Length: 324
Image (cartoon, rainbow, N blue to C red):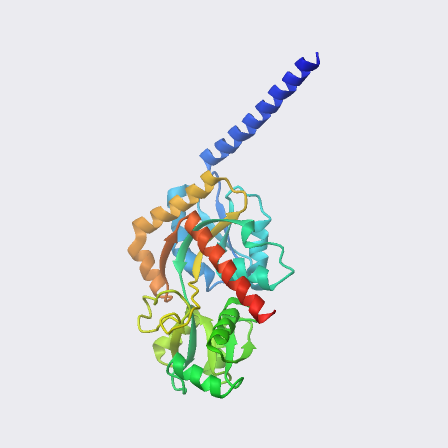
């Protein structure tokens, strides 16, 4: 009798596992059956611009629209945290950048998520972070800036979009490698940081390209270096720090991630849609990104995950050096 009960329980358990697996497979097979929400963890004007040219067209290949929803706050922590805590079914995604997914949880102990709280889907574009100075100022190159800074420790001031944000950390990490000391003046956003530079209140800014681009094109600001691994197509004359002999290199990729635990079939469907958009509308998308000083950079789930992991290692080490 006990054996019969045991076998019945075993069979019931097997049926339950089978049913759960079948339900999961069926859900993946029918994905998506409703609109997909892409949470942008910043106000309009930065991350959304780096994703929208592709995200807006993914619905053509998914059969359901991808709708952008803005949830700014805490340097990207509010929106990213909401996605990390959401149901991992592929219907709630987050627009990812190393600033919101990597730097924020490292710098803010109140943030409850980590990079491992997400399943990377795809990178979409490469923007860029750079050091800019007034075009009529005394520094025409990194070498001139470093030389002056070594002779005048702490005298050079620089603005960023916020303390312990990605632009702040990169500038401090570079200063440490170059053996110089700068005075950081944080602002609430890239716009005010650039305004301060234009007004002569600081000597330099560490910034994303978008808020500085119009001023660079107008000739009022000069870009003297980019933080990425390679020169940006929009700025072929601006060298990388690595070209100048430094080790620091940090390309800035913008992409899409899902909550941890999202079925692989769903992740593959989302990535396939992004890939098909780039294949069909590549020239149009490239032109859209070029107006922002950016370019298309499509990576699949594994490649994008490897990139975010490298960023986590880089900034973990950087924060430790700044706050030993």
